[in-house]
Amino acid sequence: MQNLWIKLACLVLLMVTVENTHSREPVLHRVGGGRYSWKPNVNFTDWAIDEQFFVGGWLYFGFNKQLYSVLQVNETSYTNCIEGTGRGYCFKRMKVAIFVRNYQPFPITNGSLLNKVSSDSNFQAKLILLVLILQVYYFESIAFLFFYILF
Image (cartoon, rainbow, N blue to C red; front, side):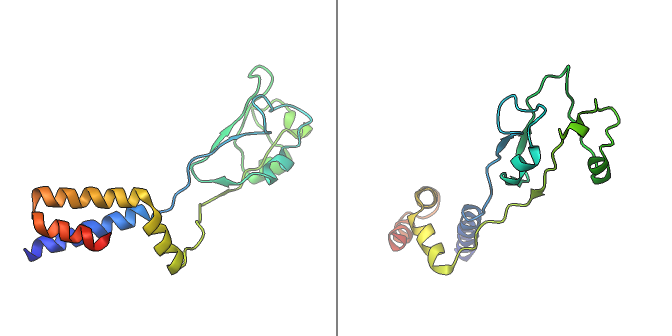
């Protein structure tokens, strides 16, 4: 019976850990702001300043393949417009530097963590499901007691 309680405690701890893991949904960034915006006379530096790039996001370059190309270069090549197989548009300011950051969620204080967990219906649904599974497979009366104590 004690082994069962250890398994139960580990399962609840795992559910709470997974529920409170913060991640960011991938974001699609249309370079230049529009669907077909990779063209001369667009200030891509100004566009990039207003965007926030995080790991896992996507960059969409909408352009005519017969006219333009997209190359990934190092900092020196970017600064000096060393394109290699490019078509010379770097000198017309058709270049953009993207600074990608890791997602850092806002810190949660102890009070707001309790409010988040108590108001999170997804967490409650998972907890109810856990209790129902425990009731069916392990021990009926204690599972109901556990459920009523939590809610």
